[in-house]
Amino acid sequence: MQSLDVISVNIWQMLVSLANLVLIFLMVKKFLYKPVKKMLDARRSAIDSQYDEAQEAKEQALCDKKKYEEKLQAAKDEADKVIKAAVSTAGEREKEIIAQAKTKADGIVRQAENEAALERKKAEDAVKKEIVEVSSLLTEKVLEREVTAADHQHFIDSFIESIGDEDGTN
Image 1 (cartoon, rainbow, N blue to C red):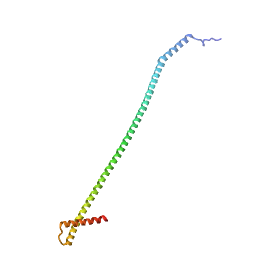
Image 2: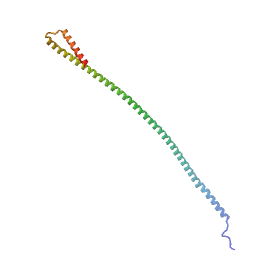
Image 3: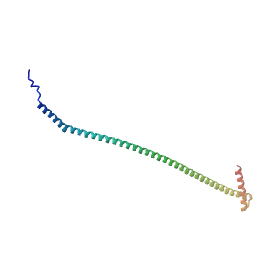
Image 4: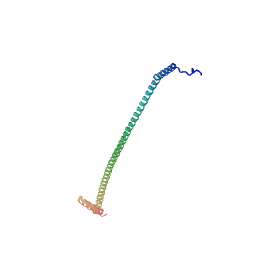
């Protein structure tokens, strides 16, 4: 049989290999695993803080949006109040202007009526004066004498009364 030297077990070599393995494991753990784990934890905490900041920013944005909508609604309500007040004021002003116009128109009508009455009175006085002159001339011619003031007044009054009666019957 052949010798089994090829397959021999060397305990010292196995112990040295095992010691090398343990040393490599410890060095990897100390110099590689812990710094990498520390870096990953730092990165995770940074990401978590960014998520928290984003959530806070989102909540703040929603709060700001709600405040903006409330202010916008308040502004719309205020605008509606201003418009209603303006419409009300315009309506009151319209009534006031119409009342002033009616008052002015009534004044103009009254003034025109007064002027017409005055013109009518002037015309009547002018007609009476002319009638007096004509009647005076007629009377002088008819009587061919001088008429006294009393006679003259009597003729005028009777003539005017007869004209007044004729106007009343027409």
